[in-house]
Image: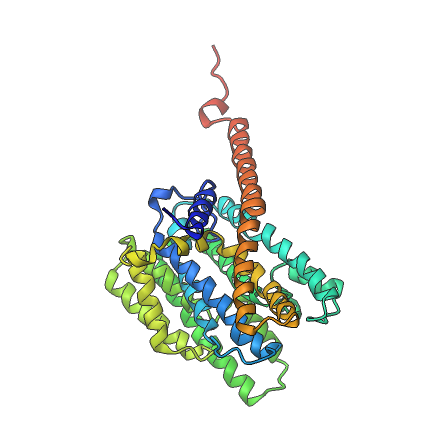
Length: 390
């Protein structure tokens, strides 16, 4: 007989999968075609960030009432894995399979409802709770609602959402590549883009080091961030891995380019990622892409993958508030972290089941009906010709 936790996981996983695929990158796919190991990687990336924020970041930003006993300072690797995974799965579902309108709509309904909900929640948290002490302005609120506050000179209300800015810019890149026909020669297109990143970041770093107060500093910063140049090689690595997976292009050249992209990433990286870890993470992604890591088909990991987006969005500020409140009531730091983790997962599950999924399903249905109505209203070529005279 299953234990209560196992019954909860089974019920939750079954309930979550009554709806279409919920990943912000993957879109809807038949369940039989899903690579479960990739779902597990998304869950691992999310849990990595949660542990990083609840231990290392909280200890440095707010401080525990007594020593926690350990910290987990490896959050940057969860982000690195996520960007490589995003490059792979977006290429897998977008190249040659989606129209630009369908792609943009799928991303919008997946990203914005839950994101806007967490931003509005954080307006309350940051304004009224003593842990944060943040006086908000209308400009900050609108900038955060756009997903790109840093481009407007503001900080993210929810710190973890800085990655969404990069993700949204990556989506824009995919659309531009599709419109320009760049997918027809993926290797050439990505080589040009990544090499441009290398040259630009090298020159920008040299200029900023030699002339720190130069009038060029701000324009260079804007270009670098709008083009997410420091992270572009990671997405490119994932996209070329998808080319190899699907037998497109020259495999040897694609492998060589992936190695080159990894070297470029390390050369322009500002976060001191360990090259050996980069190689290990890409190797793990490769093994998962071919479905060669059965232990990752662990049901709790697959359950977390289904709520990973809302868990990612809601965990940091809410979790920090919970840890602060629990410690204030006399709970030890380790117990406070564990309770905050459990409650964050509960919030992510509830938000996914009762808010995100029903809304996403309705919006998808509206879009499908709208397209059907447009197709019906548009006369076919054969019917649009004028009738011949009798």
